[in-house]
Length: 161
Image 1: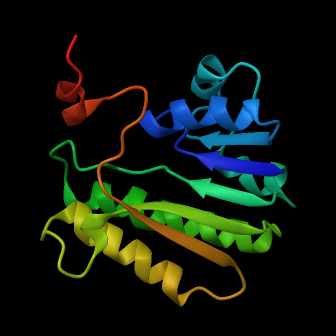
Image 2 (image 1 turned 135 degrees about the vertical axis):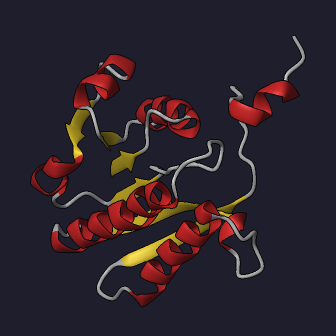
């Protein structure tokens, strides 16, 4: 199976990439800096977003984990740029590049009765994009706090040394 991942340098991505690779999947890691991704995952093919269409054609799935998370106080437009505009461009490229489908990691914050924050509003807009899209299979995963073998951010206090 051939899988593209965005957001691989984040907490979930750092745990998911080695597991998918160990399963024998062909991976394409996409981010703002191919060099940074390559330093984290030297054995994997790493490209920048502008090269997604060139290298991603015909992949089976694109797992979209890139996010401007709610763990920082940032201007509203920052959430909109990453969580909506970047996601829209990825959906457009995926559809045009004959990628089999997109799995979008989202948040419980995106639910209609979720919090009234710029982060939550941006995640709701991203879900609207998914729901209005035609010609591409999209699976939205609305995740609560996610944990694994490594904790970061607010969840890091969950681990007793």
